[in-house]
Image (tube, rainbow, N blue to C red; front, side, top):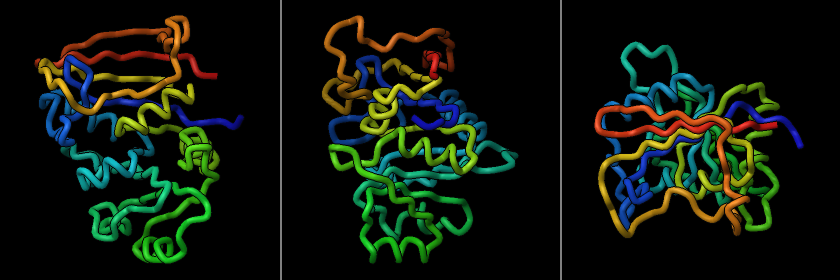
Length: 222
């Protein structure tokens, strides 16, 4: 297998492990201090990656909004069916901030043409068995392009795919003191049947950010 960048995954969840309500609302589960942490992570990584579901739900800019921050990360989207809207804020600002879309080959020619005309870089990668672009193949492409660090924000399907691929070096989980009940789980099926298959970190640290607690887990990645 090829090399991958240094990968950090981070997300905010409720005490009962939800990253959004059943209606998809997620702003804001975490507090102000934890949100600043997220923007520091954006500042400190070369590439910021999310899934197309996050883009369709929130229409984010994926920029670093820390005062005086010298740069924004390159923005990347896993979008297997090339559904990124032309009117989204990512596309409207693609000529200002480098924006990459990973899609399954072959991509729709008309959509590719329109997105590239707007300044979006389209990267076609082989689809996995489920028809989606794999986390590892996207990460390996970024490494080949010379990117040394990748920050993955979500959503749940993307978080799960990166963890399942075994390529995450650092996981930061912001746990906010609230209960949501029925909602969107942070992590889906990792293929764990018995506890000895569970992902266990090599290093663990817990910090307090306002009312939130941030679990920082370090994994040894070959």
